[in-house]
Structures are given as structure tokens and as C-alpha cells.
Amino acid sequence: MHKIRRAVQAVFVLTLLLLLLGGVMFVAGQAVALAAGQGQWLEFFNTTFKDPMCIAASVCAVAGFLLTYQHGNEQGVAAQEATTSR
Picture (cartoon, rainbow, N blue to C red):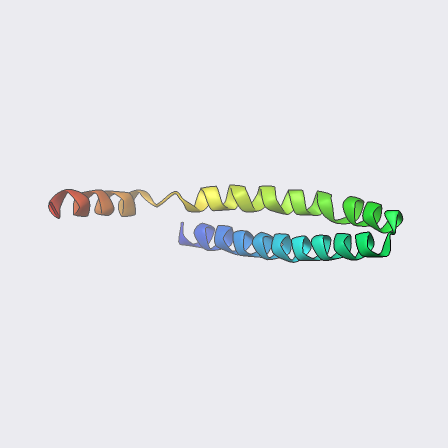
């Protein structure tokens, strides 16, 4: 189970990194294209970066959701500690 969690963490970090880098490149490219008045550049950045960024965001969100789940034993220990600490 620990190996699966590590794999999900790796996917989360990788897709988050791709999403952040893609977002920076997308915004910077759009800003340069607007400043230069190049409509073709705007279309290029929109078609090239938007779809991969949406896919990376979706995979990152699913991986982040999966990381919120804990192993059954860990949940039991956390619940027991919460009830005994009162």
C-alpha cells in the first residue's frame, strides 16, 4: 500500500510541476503576444498550452484527492487518539 501512495504522490508532484510551468509559460506568452499585437501568437499559446494544462490539472486533482485517503490502520489510530485525548 505504501508503494501505491508513493506513486500517487509522484504523479501529484509531477503534474503540479507541469501545471505550474505550463501556466507561467502560457501567461508570459499571452502577455508578450498582447504587447506585440500578434493575434497568431495568442492563438498558438491558446491551442498549444491550454489542453495539456487542463489534463495536468485534472490528473493532479485526482491524485490530490486520492492522497486524502489514509490506510485503514492509520485512520483507526487517529480516531482512537482523538477520543482518548479529551
